[in-house]
Image (tube, rainbow, N blue to C red; front, side):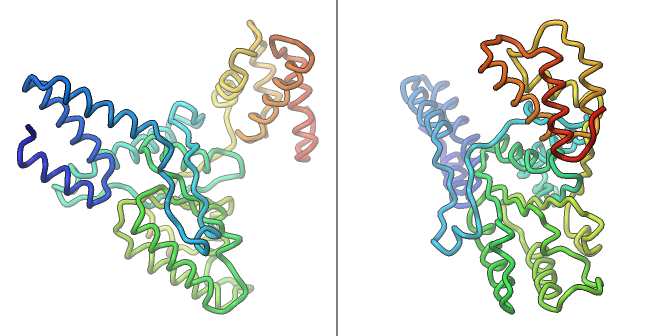
Amino acid sequence: MATADQIKSLIQSHFDRNEERFRTLALQLAAYEARQGHTKLAREIRTIIDKAGAKSNKVVPLNKELNELVQTSINVNRLSELVVTEEIKSRVERIIKEYRQRDKLKKYGMANRRKILLVGPPGTGKTMTASVLAGELHLPLCLILMDKMVTKFMGETSVKLRQVFEIIAEHQAVYLFDEFDAIGTERSRENDVGEMRRVLNSFLQFIEQDDSQSLIVAATNNHQLLDQALFRRFDDVIHYQLPGEIEIRRLIQNRLGDFLKANMEMDKLVKKAQTLSHAEIAMACDDAIKEAILSDRKRVDEELLIMMIDERKAAYGKGVI
């Protein structure tokens, strides 16, 4: 049977809410039992682990009031789906690696990156990155609804913010503060009000004191509006840009998939899609696929995709080349 150290470590990881560590120890336990000749028990343990991983039960339990502030999602993405520059991808991989090996870092008095600020234009992959972190780390993705957080009543926003950080400490997950500039605006701005300065001060205090196992991700399209004190509170700041030629090519190929016509003139399409964001290119590809399906076509050709790209450009006021 399992050794005393294995049992103690397994129990400790459970009460630490360290699911990744718990899973690793359980797999080690199954391997140990297999070496002892207890193949049936080892197989049963692995079956339990596999079933638990397949269940969609990683929902953060919230009361009715907090449900209005935090939206939990289990439909998360994987790293292979993230189309960004190699630099950004390597930095996301580093966050994942440090999280998975945080116990190793802890032995040397080091902490893994947990507080991440993502900045860049809309539709460039910031929200997708938070979803990928959740997917790769087998954690729920919790979106903080900023429009519900900020209220006109004095003191109420700070109270709600405190409640959110209590949830962050109690339930391990990836927490995304989208449109973060709603509370992170620089305190010295002339049009700022005293209440929002208090909210920002509260956030600075809460994030600095947070020592949970959760990941805190803040995303903004307007990093120039953020108070400079915020940047020191984050372990990493990642800047996103509109996709370049390599990313546009990959986006089109990945999104069209089986609908991609052989020998597609990619150079022409890449040039046409410039100035569009990742999300806008993805929507143009989806539009082309739907049109192909409804027209009983098996593939999307250049003419159809160019038409959909031009429609997106016209819709977003980006002109048609």
